[in-house]
Length: 416
Ligand code: CAO
Image (tube, rainbow, N blue to C red):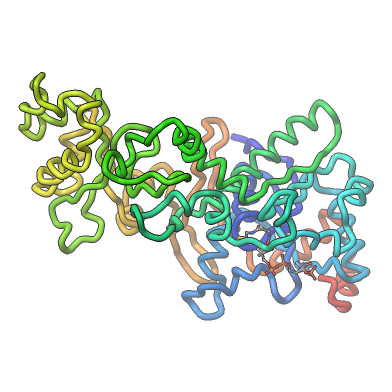
């Protein structure tokens, strides 16, 4: 079976996380991704959070599978010529440097278009045009400036960032969609275009339910929030603990073993359609009596804390998987809190390729996440990340058409 993006060549100038997430996805779908790295240095993440001395970190390997690595310094004269040739030969160029870095290398968008009018030039930046457009941005800065931190955390406590890398990896996903869309458009127009994704925009996009609630706030209290009816609502959407963003009351409750296991919890959603099943499973049929104040969704709203307290008394008598087994057949949506250890060991995730074991020549075997997007006719395999400059010679020969003498000369003057 052929890969979906076979024949697409990507000039990958990305580093750290957001850009590499994007190009790794494209590589999983079969694109030839040529990762350009500074000679002798490489992507900074190769050396960050190392668990084994002198071996590429898991941070790097887990973001750069299925790519080829070429070392190149486009700031030297020879490097500029090689870089221009790569622009000519590639379909897409992706970068996530600080604003202006590619321009300072001597390759503004106008010049890239001149060299290759079919080029799709894709960038991640922290912010879009405006007061902060020149700022450097990392994950948590995006979470804070995109509305996630102000709406995440315990009620009345400080703002909180999440462990999901929604600013970096989330924006990388947006960029990948932008690139594939621009490739589709190029089929008709014959021309490339610029694709830009700002991390602040990506986070805000994922926080849309909170922007929804900001506007609802003008028309009265947010009744599904834990602050209702006893707490105060201010001018902005407050933090809401573990309340569900979808409008269905939900909360995290303790399960058997919570005293010693930090992940012995389950999320339970008490939507109207599920409440009957929930009450029966717990042996609390009296909640369904017409004259009980909890028998209707409206009646339960002001008492959600008590409702979840009662549910918790029941869940604490069973472990999180038993609760899931009892409630799921009753169509009560619930989710056990799964630790990274449990996810790493889960056989069904291995079977679908969502968690994959990869062999690396220097570090040996390690686990990584595989492609979360499954295509029936062009499945993806996960191949190990490249060593620094592992493919320099083959790319300079095959893609740039250079001779062995020219490559030696380029190495001698530090261009590659
Ligand atoms: N050869 C020679 N020089 C190279 C090179 C190469 N192959 N690759 C990169 N460089 C140079 C760049 O030209 C740049 O030099 P100048 O500043 O002199 O123009 C320099 O390396 C470093 O680029 P940078 O400023 O992007 O790197 P940084 O570590 O200081 O900042 C980051 C990192 C991520 C904060 C910044 O790149 C950024 O804000 N990127 C956009 C937003 C983003 O993607 N953030 C998420 C990152 S993942 O957490």
